[in-house]
Structures are given as C-alpha cells and as structure tokens.
Image (tube, rainbow, N blue to C red; front, side):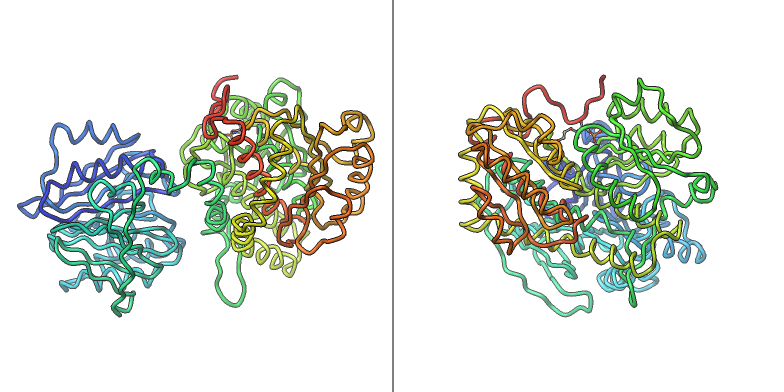
Length: 622
Ligand code: AGP
C-alpha cells in the first residue's frame, strides 16, 4: 500500500500535500515525494528516502511554490526504497509525473517496448512505466485525459494514480483499479487522496472512485468518466469521522482494520504471480528467476523454514501442502533455536526465511548461518529492502501493505498465500504436481479473497456477533485456555493461542489434538475452555473424539466448524462456523474468527489492542 494525495486550487500546494502525506504514512513510509507545478509552468519534483520528515527537511530550504501538485508516501513493491525509486515518477522530459499505489503486472514488457522507442528510464519501479506510456500516448496531442485513459487500458494489475503535467497546469488527473482513490470537493479547490484522513482537514464532501473511473480535476470542476470517456457520476458522501478514527479507516483499532483488510491482502499476494489470462490462470514467480538461472535449485533435496511467532505458524501450515505438492521433506525451525544449534544445512537445503518486518534479529542470525553453509535462501517478507532481503537469493514479497498493529494478521494471510504459490511452483518444476493439480491450486487461491469476505461478513451479522460475544464471555476471565487441532489445524491452534495471549494476556496454549491424552488433558476442568479446530478434513472424526474426551471432563468446548456441519453441535457448547474450503486452504478462513475472538477478549479486558504490553512489532534484539 502507498499513500497518494493531489491538490488543485488557489492555495499553496506544498503544505497541503505534506500534511496529507503525514496522514497517510500508515499506508507506507519508506520514501516520499511531491511534484508541484509552479506559477511559471515548471514541474518541481522533490523526493527523499525514509519517512516523511526527510522530505520535509529537503523542501524546507527550497519549497516548491505552486497551486497544483501531487504527493506520495511509499510502501515499496518494486525497487528498493531510495530517492530514485521514490514517487512521483516523470517521463523523459519530466513534462508529466505520476504517483501510483498498486502493482502494474505487465510493466516489464511495457518498459521494454518503451525503451525500444527511445524512452529512458531512471528507476526500478513499475510506476515509471506509466509516466512514459502517458508521454507516448500523448505524443503531440494536447488531450491529457485521453492519453491517461489509453495508458490505463494497456496495463494489467492494480493502480490508484495521480497525474500532473506542466503542459496542463491547473489540472490533476486521478484514476483507480483495485487500489482506493477518493476525490475531495472543496470551495474553488479539489483534492485526490488514497484515504479520507489526508483531506479531512479541508473537506468532508468526498466522492469514492470506482474501479475503472478516471477523475479530471480543476480548481472549480470535477469530471469523472470511465476509461472509454463515458461520463460517470458517483454519489457525493459526507464524512463525519474525526481525524484519529479516519486514520484507522473508521475502525477503532488498526488490528480491526487489518483484519478487515485481509481479503485484499490475500488478493494482493497473488498479483503479478497468478496471471489470470484465458484459457487458464498461469503461475509465474519472476522474482526467483535469478535463483533459477543460478542452477542452485537443482541441488535442493529438502526445505527448511526459518521464522518466529506468527511467521512460524504460517510456515507450519504451508509445510503440509509443500510436502504434498513438491514431495520434498520440509522442516520448520524456530529461528532463535536454529541459530544456536548445529543444523544439517548445505547446498541441498532450500532455506525459506519468513519475516513480516524482515528485521527480526533471530531470523537474520539463523539466515546468516544457513547462508554460510551455502544453502540457497528465499526470503518471504512484507518489507521491501529490509535486512532479510539482503541475505536472500530470491525474495517473495507478501505485498500486504504496512501492518501497524503489533499482532500479525494480514501478513499471516499473505505469507500462507505466498508459500502456497511457492509450493505449487516447486511442484511444477519438480514435475511432482500435474497441470490439473496446479490449476486446482490456483483456482483455490483465487477463490480465497471472496471466501474471506464471506467469512468476515458472517461475523458482522447479529448471530455471528452473538456467538463471538458469548464465547468472549467464557474466555475473558479464564486463567487458561487450550486450543487444539490436527493437520493444518494444529499450527492454526498455535496461532489462535498466540493471538489470545498476546492481545488479552490470558494464558493460552495450542496443542496437536492427538497429544492431549499424553498430558495436556490433565489441564481440563470446568474453568479451562477448549477451542477445537474441527473444520472438514481427513482427521475431522479424530478431532471430534478429542472434543468428546474433553467434554467428558467438563471443559467448555468451542468448536470451529465448517458451515452446514450440524453434527458437531451435540459435542460443543459453542460452534463458530466458517465457509467450506479445501482442507489446506481452510486455515485462511478459520483464522479470522480466532483473530476476532482474541480481539473481543482483549477489549473485554481493557487491553491496549494495537500495542500490547511488553511487545514490539519487530523484535530487532535477541
Ligand atoms: C505475531 O502476532 C507477533 N507480532 C510476533 O509473533 C511476530 O510474528 C514475530 O515477532 C515475527 O515477526 P516478523 O515476522 O516481523 O519476523
């Protein structure tokens, strides 16, 4: 995710742009930039790596002066965070400049085409392609709006863009597809923004652009059309949020906002990797091309996952699928243990280092150990240019956008989705996965975002909220809570327990359900609830047996089950239903009520949801 802001009016644009970007830093903060058309018709661009303060310092000495401009705060997806890759990006002559949020999937082929026509590129970003394509489409014409529309018809992927051109002073053009963009309606001034907080100080009248819309703004007019130029008139909405609530998108906590963003994060994890072209979706992990070209994958006979916390749980879930699809032995190592052990690792071991922040000290140390043993390294991280990326031979970004809340949610989803893509890719390379099997996996992944939306919707219904409330009532005062599951349900039980304890400080522990009778069942009594992952799968009956054993010891049973499973109701005190999904994919849905439950218990206990006590978002020390 990135933050975009645009202004056209009669006031000084620079402070309005900078203030707007400050309100959007939660969307990305590895670099920032503004472009302002000055009163003399120049296009002044200022960009700086790092947080917004670096840009403020840069412009403090020579502030661009003009009444039209755009700004951008970045969460990198292509190209390291640095001054050159910061947005906005200009065409060859810096006549046009573009700020972009999203992923242009076909940017490489477009870039080759434009370079063959003589365009010179300066950055490694997908966004710069848009500026040169608009320049190409504009040619000698004066129709900027048509040039932008023609450009957007040629790109695949997601975008929210803001465009200014020094040949077209007094205008800002915005457009969106799969990334948010709104128009703010002022008095003799108009705004563009990725999100409401950026402009709430100036106007509460907004227009939410829809996918395929293009908005052409002057100080006094706003013209919206589709990409064919057919007029559109989306409704004007009045926003009554306060600024703080607006930064969380109206949610009370970032944790709640980021849970709600999970379907979008699941969708973004697939962008640029599953190319949904007819006749069938195809899988492409271009980011691993260099590793493939090195030949080092050919020596791989096993896989080791390295991670901590939630990242480990995601790896444990993916392990089942990757062993099934790629027929390679997979082990999952806790980084803080691995780094001090004497692991068997070498060129035959593909190490996959998972870290949302990419800065966790233990994961970096463990990865260095594997690297010193000449193991090929793939990093799966949410943070472009993070330390883990510099230790890896290939990087698969989670593409989930900044995750502000300490407790991981959408990065977990994005990690599992990314690892499943990697598993299918390894399986096809090894020919242990047939094409029909690969197609089934890709279609299952493509279905996940909508199934997640359906899952979220069930917990917005009165019945869903009542179920959560009643279970919250039983968990909020308990001394300890047990979570059990089998197969992919086991790491999910660990993740559910982690969410409860890190958010609400209620002790919780996850177990492989089959382990209960080897000790943990001694813990069960009326005061110790048991949360069982009992969704459909080959071990469903076994989990039901474990539930019955627990019930016989008077434990309060919460069963997470597949919609339509009525039989489970006789065994559980509360049933939380989730939509049906193929067994390996069910955790992507079932984790949602586990997150919501932990959230409700934390609220009931008055905990600080986004910054739990003793915890940090990135553990950069041992
Ligand atoms: C999970 O909710 C916690 N925030 C924590 O366990 C986290 O997953 C762990 O510290 C690893 O962080 P990383 O993915 O940034 O390396």
